[in-house]
Length: 194
Image 1: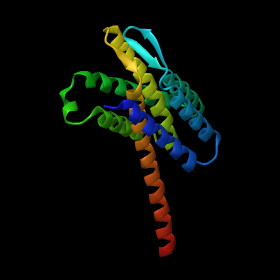
Image 2: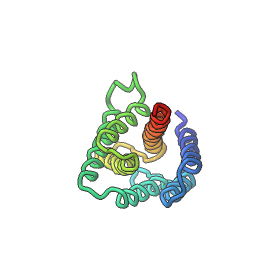
Image 3: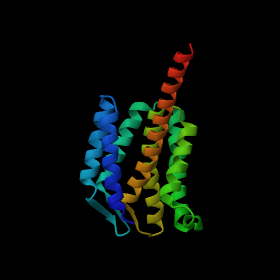
């Protein structure tokens, strides 16, 4: 599969959504800066071990996710939710290495949907869903890479991580947009009936 092409397509799609559909705020500026740095540093890699290389864009997402996490999640419950989602993501990636279910459904579809459902079930607000998902996926991918490195299996933190992340963010954004439009429709119907 042509993963870098999918990464760039999702990245620019994400930039357009953030730039045109978010209100002007520091969060919007932070997400745009993270997006542009991610796009610019995607091709640059650091080789840690013969079995592992990490894209510099991953560090941008990781630091941005941790910054947003510290800023917006302040309860112990949020930490527990992020830890649970991190373990879920790492377990699904490890399961993807050996499970025959991937002949039926592709991991690029199943893993983001599973993480999205856990995020919606465990977090109420869309911003907490977004921040917890970004943090959990970045830390979960580090855990997955560390497990593979222990068994001396090659693990690259590159386009696949970003495709999982962008797919999950896209699902969260679509769900938020649908609930927003449903609320608007409800308000207009209530006003017309009153």
